[in-house]
Image 1 (cartoon, protein in one colour):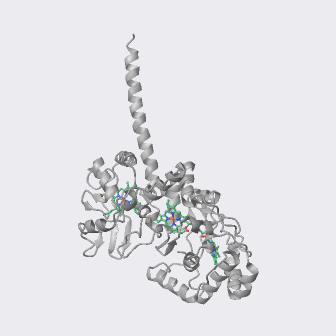
Image 2 (cartoon, protein in one colour):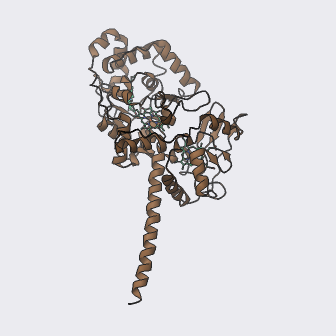
Image 3 (spheres, protein in one colour):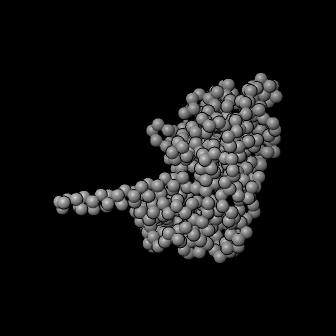
Length: 416
Ligand code: HEC
Ligand code: HEC
Ligand code: HEC
């Protein structure tokens, strides 16, 4: 036997070990995308994962922390057990974490996935960066008070795995409810900012929609998605590009696709869709009824032609999706709640540019041009013409949304 054989064996072994570590790192990177850690742990224009994004709550402002492995300012001192405790129970090294860190959902992430996430974060370059100090009122500034919150609201049931569902559905169940933490935005919250129910509690309100930052994180339960005309193909397109003939994404949801959903494998996106639609068929398309709508809402029709048709097309067919979406097949007009239709008109939408190919023109705001009466007429015209509206919007409804948006500072610019 020559000397070369043991050396080769040794090299092969080292290589195998390196390859395993590499795959664990890649797996961790993928899971971090599925969990969208970057969205919250990065400040505007900050380096990824170094913290400092503000969370404005009625109790004051809280900042996300640095989760690079820096010993002083990051999570360099965490062991796997401590990292697991922060993900599963909101127990940080320096006390209880505020539930702005979605451990109420991450508690369902498997130990195996947590280990891969830990490996990934511990092998990122360590960056020294301290986020600003929190500015919270008494008693919210006392972390030990959160033990009581956890005792009340931190569920400890495992993820429900109902029988008779496909493996694909179960995978979607895990991605949506554990890593994807979709419920944290899409579920109404109680006075203590806890989600009203969780999948394991069988609550009717889970994923039933919630207004946040002035947008309605819409009802995404199967029957609501069906009524809005969503099917597999359109959701797949929406979750890959952020827009489709059924509607475009904006606000936080645009970022969910940009940082998270578009980086998932097609299989995992399909699993999410299987879970969301729950194997149900979309309802038949809503017949367009522009004639009746023009008769009932002549001012709304006139305003649509004057202010909107230039981009969205006279017949509501849009120009091209890259320019402005169609109204005639738009899910936002078919939703039970007219919140987003009203809010889009009042505040407009910023232009989005992901790269040279994926860019979308913005939409101007109309809160100065159109008063509550006319916004209501316009929304009623569109919802009747293209959305099969079951309920009319009143000027008082618009006034209420306008007031809330104004109070929260969303009606200041002309393009926000
Ligand atoms: C919705 C926002 C949000 C998301 C998504 C999020 N975090 Fe956090 N996280 C926070 C906030 C806010 C804090 C700080 C909480 C506090 O100070 O009490 C935090 C704290 C932490 C801590 C404790 C750090 C310390 O300084 O002690 C760890 C670890 C952590 N997050 C890991 C993660 C990982 C891993 C992911 C992705 C799987 C993730 N977070 C996703 C908001 C988020
Ligand atoms: C300058 C072009 C332009 C004008 C004028 C315009 N829009 Fe838009 N609108 C857009 C673009 C672009 C989007 C998609 C932006 C995005 O999602 O990022 C959009 C989105 C929307 C949406 C949300 C659609 C969805 O897919 O969820 C609604 C509703 C809407 N517009 C209604 C109107 C109404 C009503 C008017 C007239 C008062 C109007 N728009 C005027 C360009 C325009
Ligand atoms: C950080 C908050 C946030 C998270 C997390 C979040 N969403 Fe959303 N989502 C929103 C908001 C706000 C809207 C409404 C704005 C829009 O339609 O773009 C929305 C809209 C949607 C829509 C409706 C699109 C339409 O036009 O009808 C779907 C479907 C959706 N989200 C699915 C998901 C799924 C699946 C997840 C988890 C992987 C998720 N969301 C996580 C905030 C969030």
